[in-house]
Amino acid sequence: MKTYRDFEWKAAHVNAAPTNPNIYCGVDTHADTHHAAIGTEHGVFIEERQFSTTRTGYDEFAEWMNNVGHVIAVGIEGIGSYGAGLTRHLRNIDTAVVEVPRPNRRLRRDHGKSDPIDAEAAARTVLARHQVFEPKYCTGLIESIRALRIARNSAVKAATAVINALRSMIVTAPEQLRTQLLGHSQGQLLDACAALTRSLGDLADPSEATMGALRSLARRVGELRKEARDLKKDTDTTDQRFRTTHSRALRARTGHRGCPVDHCGRQSGATPK
Image (tube, rainbow, N blue to C red; front, side):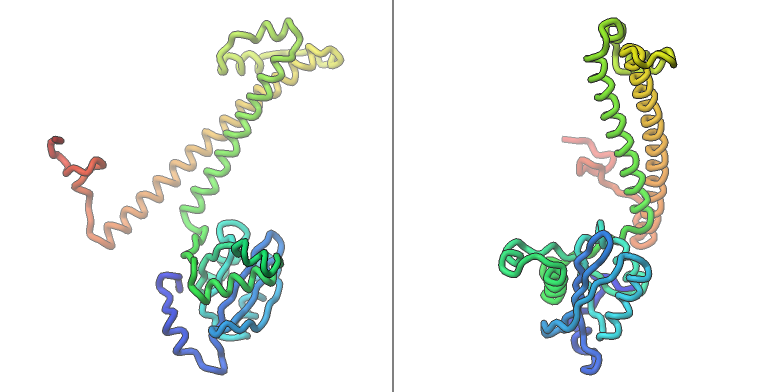
């Protein structure tokens, strides 16, 4: 499978036949559509086209490129976001992919901002090999860990937002209820609010409505924290699996069985000076 590091740029220029020109492609990515432009190794742009961000669109994009010429490399903007799906698809069909930065501001001032212009700029960046990077393919255990961490961080932030809303509501709560809840630690406050009861038929009373709202918020915090704990366990398990797998692979490649130097730069067992 081709990667950016293994790709032989010079050999690709020499070996392609004139009837099948070497081409470079740049892609400007968006949520629903991608815009692509194709140029030759001499900087002459041949075609530009728009594709949908679906499996069918990716297949059409690959077929279009291969019909135009011999694909040297594809430069994609936003590989870690909108371009992730296209990057995975191209990698699966053994097409070299590099990540390119977004066009600089001077180019946009001189030529304007449009999808075809951005796609052409991406292709020129690949051809010039200027500021191109090996992409993150968003696959394997790393992608699993990233997804779990995003979900956990979202649950933690949501719990914090709910706690802030609960505290703000207590500040403006009716006097008797506010006095009842003052002076508690966060854990005690959440337990007290979760245990509040109200009359189901008396929501017109601000005290009853506030008690119902506080109970709802406190219980929501508990659910979000439980969700965050569960996701933390899943993340730790996946992270440990990743470390074990890659440490075995490293030992298999290098024959290395352990590091004789600790984190302070001293040999193990050595007496610090």
